[in-house]
Image (cartoon, rainbow, N blue to C red; front, side):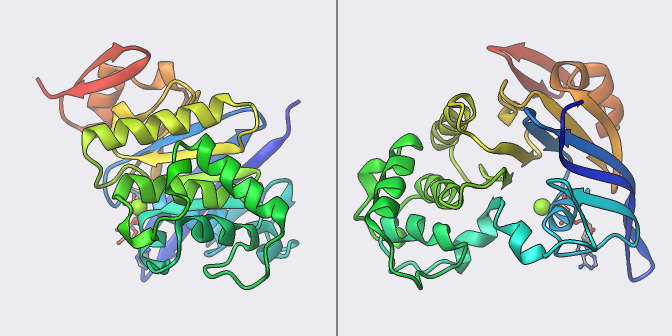
Length: 260
Ligand SMILES: Nc1ncnc2c1ncn2[C@@H]1O[C@H](COP(=O)(O)OP(=O)(O)O)[C@@H](O)[C@H]1O
Ligand SMILES: [Mg+2]
């Protein structure tokens, strides 16, 4: 049996009498990359907060990288989880050089408190090249485009050599060319063989690259469906999921949605 990256069992989460997550069962195994698809407010970020141990289930069990919550130092565990979201962008200092933003990921901190070693500089440079942003090394972070910033943040998350990399709506706010460039980098990373397991969270179906072998559909805090991406993403199932008729067309192993 392959081992678990994380396992969420019968999990519910309530806030102010409202059930935000309900009866979630979801296991991600070694060797899998997952996409999570759901409309705004469906509970995607809430699940991510739970995987990171920022919130605890009201009911049910969570274990991450083989460690059941309640018996693990969450700060230690979080070092094995990289997280990229647009809210992280706002917390970084714009006056830092791109290379320093990437380097700061080594210590999973926002600023750069310890003195980096040569090997750290080399690793930062290598990761930036891998993500297709090697040329930005001396640029001020604030002067980078939205897409470039997202690439830098992925490189930053990789500095800590995480086992799991979470991309929460990483393509938000990008024009179609920047988005394709970012997706290409993500695809290459996944195919490189030195990639952490990835969780790619989105509400755009066409962003689900073929490397995301599995997909979970989340609706109103509940798992609507999960499984192999090719089996989950189809016109019939998604029309039910969205409660409106949609049409899915596959092109180059990516699914495109249209509303007839
Ligand atoms: N700390 C909280 N307290 C109360 N409600 C919350 C809290 N966090 C999230 N929610 C609510 O839970 C729902 C799901 O939010 P979220 O997980 O951010 O959705 P998504 O990421 O899919 O857009 C929303 O209705 C949101 O308002
Ligand atoms: Mg969200």
